[in-house]
Length: 497
Image 1 (cartoon, helix red, strand yellow):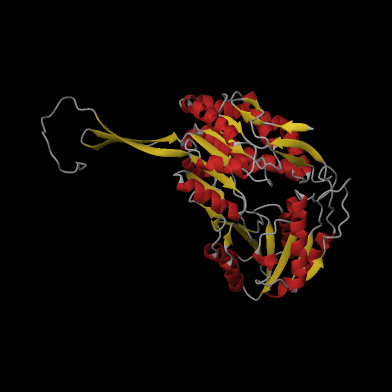
Image 2 (cartoon, helix red, strand yellow):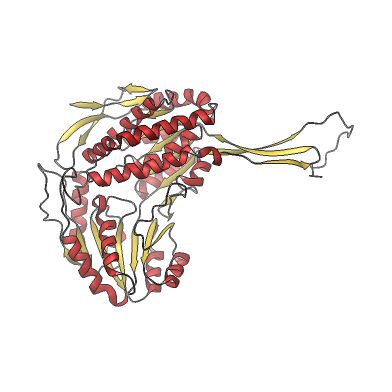
């Protein structure tokens, strides 16, 4: 059985942890590898490597750092298909979706290649008599990135290209369900010329996470996962005085007005609801039909949902399996709960016949109608291919529904009415808004992040927010007098004159 080790100080590291976890191919149910789970000593070794590498990397010129980033970008472009195949083998999403994940992560690498512009300070000559003032941005030190299972490449790449370009060193803790992509990326960084110790990987569960959150040399933590864990990460790491950006769960609504192109809306509801088997924090899980468009919209979504092909992501399928047997059980239990609560199950995915070999973790796309706010299929983040349709009489009713939800990650409106779209985008209390765009993940030079229980901490990912998160500002006030002017002692607070 293949053993997936850690990556510390530029090479594979077996570690001292006695525990190991199974790595499973979700399409077949077969265990394909074992992953070593880090002990506290292993975390100490990884952080120590990052700490020792930091002074040299922080003092490396911007020109050299960006050359390494450009080299990493080119290597990734040449070998992106390899990485997509690794994602599919451990997460299960179809190959085209995995390739899209790699491409969206690569956008952040390309953004980070131009970081020199965003690291520029400012300078004011003669701010006071003989006094100049300038600002600079400096890296923090070793930073920890704790990644989720659903995007083992894209989500870590929201953070580490910016952090590395800014002069920080990295300890990445990927999900133990999908560990191989992180090791592949570590080797790619080595091939790109990144110095040893700048990028480290440790695998593990809560013990490894808590060791990183509490380690005195870790200066900042970036996390993406469920809301309960995000709360824990934020509370624990911030209590230790660290910078934290912790992205939690979501319940994303797509509002459809009667004037919308219903064919477009139905296409996008299906794409955004069932892509990656619904295992996306930005998935549309609630379609809010406004006014008299509901019957026609549900019929169009039903038609498209029934046509989807579920199976092994390496085959000609639209949707792959869920990541684990536990995820499969959870999603099926929510479908049962929706039926028991009185929702109308328009498409039942529990009896899907997947195109796959073995006992994979498959459930087909499921569509509910007549869902109400008191039902668990509305209140909870299912994280599976379950799309709920809710009916409301007006746009203001839709806005009240969205704004009352405890999550505020993403939302979308489909309409041909510019005034309605503008009212929606200005009134909705959600961090990312799409207008005729179902999954409004911004491009890399803007920042990703939600509101309410979808984000803990003030900083969003990548873009300018990301640069500021991974650097700290310093302001220098300087004076170079030609000679002592004999001004003498003066205890008055200095003034700019």
